[in-house]
Image 1: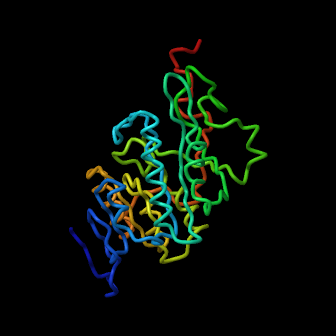
Image 2: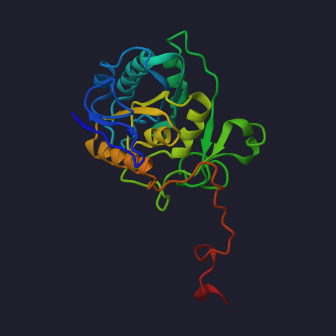
Length: 276
């Protein structure tokens, strides 16, 4: 286990960053390289105020091992059960999911996860938030929603404004882009933790990836813990947390207006040689 402690320029003790395999109690930010269930086995009950994550969708991304769908659900149910155990009474569980697709058929993961979470009668669904972004690939065997290749039918937005978050996803030239192929934006977590936690509360991400949830936590004076089995992602997460603490992190600040193309950009214009 490696620990890092330093002093700020004012002589105060800086936040303690801990790299570990198992859970330890003395930390401000804990980053663990481990299997999620093995890590959670060592976490005391009633530890975290907010648990927020985007679990693997079982679609064969480089960071996941694709399983039979039934086996995937069993694994996720075990993980959710453990997450609820380590969640404080009155705490919040935020589970960001998409779809699992097999042989052209869509399986809405939120429906499966809702059933898994409700196996604990103390868990109550308070909000169902739609995160949408207008970038992506065209669907070839089902409807592409909204302004192709957008991700929502605009007619619904007026009815569900309060529960639809328009936040750009992290792709190509996004300032937060790292080695992770499917990281979520820091702002997504910032909105949740500002609504659901207070300073010094602990935020936990059981599928940490490159640490967006932990970065959001330290930016707003929360403690944080996360685990991921990929050491390369943990290393990147550690570097991002350090950058956030030092004020050098490149990220899209909360509340930044979304860029709206004017139509005058070079890539949106008809090439000169095509004009008559």
